[in-house]
Length: 303
Ligand SMILES: *[C@@H]1O[C@H](CO)[C@@H](O)[C@H](O)[C@H]1NC(C)=O
Ligand SMILES: *[C@@H]1O[C@H](CO)[C@@H](O)[C@H](O)[C@H]1NC(C)=O
Ligand SMILES: *[C@@H]1O[C@H](CO)[C@@H](O)[C@H](O)[C@H]1NC(C)=O
Ligand SMILES: *[C@@H]1O[C@H](CO)[C@@H](O)[C@H](O)[C@H]1NC(C)=O
Ligand SMILES: *[C@@H]1O[C@H](CO)[C@@H](O)[C@H](O)[C@H]1NC(C)=O
Image (cartoon, rainbow, N blue to C red; front, side, top):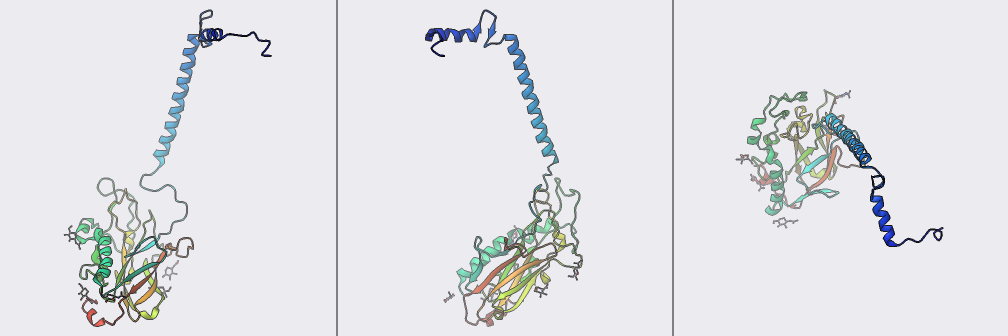
């Protein structure tokens, strides 16, 4: 077919193209009259304006229906994780190992706890007193606090008694009665228990080395996480919220090591998730490398 076409020189092709760009015979520009070009431009301009408007409307509707105070997507029924302090995170087995007669060793533990407890400082918490009713969920449907926020109940560190670091800045790590602190992660709008006759309670059991554990004590009493710290409404609504804590003080004897499991017991908190070993519970070992009997020195700090 190509052979049938007359051969055209480059100059002719350029001329053809120029003719296409501006055809003076019928007054068309690129095959259309200027008038048609104006119409087609207007059409596309209108088309894109409408598309943009639709897109903006969709985004606006989405943003309008999103609540900035709560997460919109939770992929499963949530149950909070549980953590223990002092801890070196990222390890499968949490081992709190120290040497009670080596100052550098136990001061690492107490420094970690002091740091962790800094926000719970009683003086910082003074302005957080909102007549929280102990034993009752602090349900707040309205934003009654300043700058459109909700109130948070205070958790002064003194509630942790001898594990507060106030009387004993070593948290018991210089002797045989170390303290660990149990914290449950926050979940927005979560009520741990719907059974009003059941307390939300930390319960530690000894998994190994039972003979080395003389006593387990909880602070606050009975390891109770008071209901007034729940529900949590999110960081935007409750930027001053502090998780309630439970301190566990263990009296280690004999070989001075044991493996513990501490659970937060409440009917909405599950703890048997094989995919998440920290859900509802935490397992850790406590080990004092110093073995010689030194109980005589400890009477002073025991409460
Ligand atoms: C514990 O610390 C004491 C004092 O520094 C030291 O004599 C002892 O060997 C340490 N024990 C262990 C098991 O590291
Ligand atoms: C608590 O905070 C106050 C004021 O910031 C400070 O003076 C005090 O030492 C802190 N207490 C503790 C135990 O850290
Ligand atoms: C541990 O520290 C506390 C507070 O500083 C002190 O009262 C106690 O005597 C110390 N215990 C030992 C065994 O050093
Ligand atoms: C509520 O808790 C109490 C005490 O733990 C228990 O006896 C009771 O069976 C629980 N009720 C329900 C409905 O789970
Ligand atoms: C803690 O758990 C153990 C074992 O499940 C149970 O026997 C014990 O009664 C619990 N203690 C409290 C205070 O709930």
